[in-house]
Image (cartoon, rainbow, N blue to C red; front, side, top):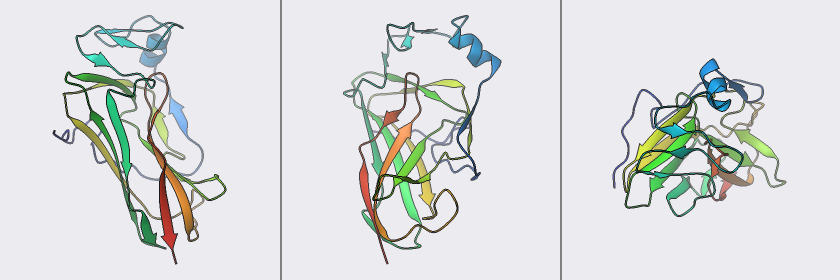
Length: 192
């Protein structure tokens, strides 16, 4: 098993600057043309209403409905003191015995981490206010390879205020063609 090295496309350890506002997408002419079915990235056949994008290569292709091909998990501490930075790692691992093509969005590859309070309201979202380039990128993972993204949360809400001690639900997302790939929810306790 290996961890994919940092690359100019999306350093596997990504920390873009924070912005306020809502998530926005930038759609380039290339993306519009690909979505319209005029052309797609080399080796890709764009899907119709019957299904997700598919690769013409001899690799497996992942859609959000395939779960036996990819292990997606979010690593974070179970408990932290109020005000202490929370390290979070989102990992995608190829579980197959053959290469796996992931069709991910963004340049660099976008990933999101969402923190919900005890009432289920969004307390913080990593991509809140970010402009996401809607560039479709194919990332090929060899058998056992891991694509990894990290972020450290400063325990502040999207409004910039410190969140109170309590129990929070955290999940990670990788925006992909056909919908986001989502981790299982994790619990984070913030103590006084």
